[in-house]
Length: 261
Length: 223
View 1 (cartoon, rainbow over the protein chains, first blue to last red):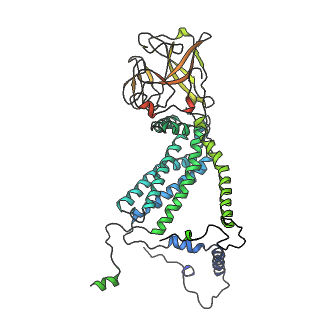
View 2 (cartoon, chains in turn brown, orange):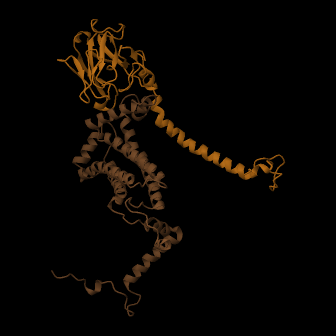
């Protein structure tokens, strides 16, 4: 097979002394740089971006380190598809099922977007557990990263809250009875359980506002908290750096090794 | 290490603060920052407290359950149940309906004390394990739950499986030639009446203290 070669005009090459400024290419590049400079002079954002993105990572970093980002992208998928599902969904007990049916069967690509949201939620739960297992088996929860583990556990619980509240929204038989059962499990906690269940249902029985309550929790309250906690989680990751895999022995810098020899 | 602030006088005049009044102990800077913080707290509370009350309000709001006629007294035998569909929450379509099993009181099986509210026995289909709908199986003369295998006898007492107490009941009365079904109540194993509890909450022994009654459902038959 003959080797494919780029035409000379597209090959990156140092500028000839003869082709000075005045080229369109150079002008665009200049404009881009000056626009970034304009923003940076007023916000100092490039320093923050450099701090967050150009970090030293330990030797032995491998694909397991992508599980956290994978979980975050699963969340972003849920957020984006969720916004579009909300355009069709109607959280009233008499309209919820019908609007879900409409967006699944009749809206253009609705089945695909709903499928992304439904299967994406399962993917997010699986990924968050794999990410947690990686952190646990690498010992990456140890000093000074304990707080990040705690934030991660809060994010895990909030992910479960999302799964629970989202399950009711299609309002078919399965989601209705699953929510009844979940509410009654809540109620069976001693002393506070009965009141918590009344709070979730907004009354003693599954009523007119239960569905809208779950909807508000699902699409506003919990996502806002999750976004805030992901921000804190990422800040601490950038602050501490990632952990080296446990099978790598710590090696002192070369100069020290020479000294001790 | 000694606290250095204790060596300072509490009077602003002694600390040579310009413009200090005699006997003044709070600096103007401190007064300003405290009052700005208090004003901020008041402003935040003005938004947060009503919002919190709005979300928590339903926990304290009593919901009344109206009496619903379900049929003439002659319709109901005393040796089996007739299913009747009842609307317990209005305005939400099918989700607000529930099935109730009704029969005439039978002195041979109903040993609890007789009064004006139990001439007809109305048994709720809400399973007392986790709230799935039970059905009455005529051949077995038992209530059976499809979810986790709860089994109840003819009077609604637990025969087997995970349920923690007998099936809930409803107050019944006869008005204008019609059997009417009223508010729900829960019972313990002796069929003693309690205000309605959610499923999964035992009412025998310590259970009745672990699961107190709620402000939303403190209904007697007279409401």
